[in-house]
Amino acid sequence: MKIAYISSAFLTDSELPLLQEMIRQGADVFYFLQMSDSSRQATIVNVRSMKPEGGVFSAAEYPDLASLSAFVPLDRIFVVNLPKPTDFHWQSFRAVWALYRMLRSGGFDVIHVTSPLRYGSFLLYLLRRRMVMTMHDPLPHSGDRNRMNRLHRWMAFRCVRNFIVLSESLREEFIRVCGLQHKRVFVSRMGVFSHLQLTVGAPMQLPERFVLFAGSINPHKGIRYLCEALSHVAEPVNLVIAGRGKFDFDIQPYLASGRIQLINRFVTDEELKTLMTKSLFVCCPYKDATQSGVVLSAFALGKPVLATRVGALAEEISEGRHGLLVDPCDSHALADGISQMLQPGCLEQMSAAIQEDFSVGERSWQHIAAQTLQIYQNVKA
Image (tube, rainbow, N blue to C red; front, side, top):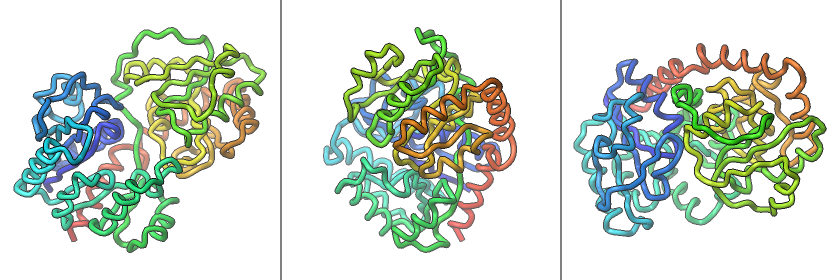
């Protein structure tokens, strides 16, 4: 089976282990990485400069992508180079047209896209008969409910027949809200972001004992409640917030307490490895969510997670075994959770359970890849 897998740099940490395992299981996979100036530094990808012209190029022409060969051979990776910030620029059209021609003439059995296409890429919907789409956010985050996002989703639901969601708990609501057929919505999941196990950490100045928030800084992440929670925790522990974005509240009074360290910029994988390895555990205090790549990054390194009971996080985190779950938007509940996680022996037991559960069985990449290939067979039927 020949597969074109089209995605963006924001998802490489969750997708390269999947593609690697599908290739091991005999699939003929080609990876098309859509890259713009806003996505050239994200997760595994850290490209310092892009080509000035739009088009589709071999990954071998981007020296900063050489590390991806640890998962997928570079001759199977192509960069869809989008050098201009608007989809209506002729260079963007040139890149999309080049991708369309490659997909149309490439003899692909399945074309897998990982989010609703932007309006500048609607041309690709002409290939929809062979298309399957993963909905990482089957129901949009509270901060993403805008007119453009609604247009992209509306077009996807009109053009694509087959969808994959990464949570059983969200499948029924997705089908109901979007008016889809049950037989056209498949369920898979994500495994741990195993590239972090191979990454060498970077030297960083960090507190001796700290819990970690890592990821983009957005209103739906609930960081305010985590900052409030720290003031209610009696144990001597600090908080490190690492990620790029703007706060929806005034964080300065919390920084003045001396218990919070802020790294407000793009965090490389090497730095993320150090942050997670040295942290006591990871916090995900989200107000709303679907699944979380931060959780699976932490689990790759055996780190327990304290998270809120939203979206599919309860499917990712077995409460009491991999971490704890608390109600969202509740700083006192977060504070109690932090104190419970710091009880003697708790973190060690959770870490051992994480390493056991995600290496074999239904949570392993081997099982997830086989499941994905079976979905492709069903899509073709």
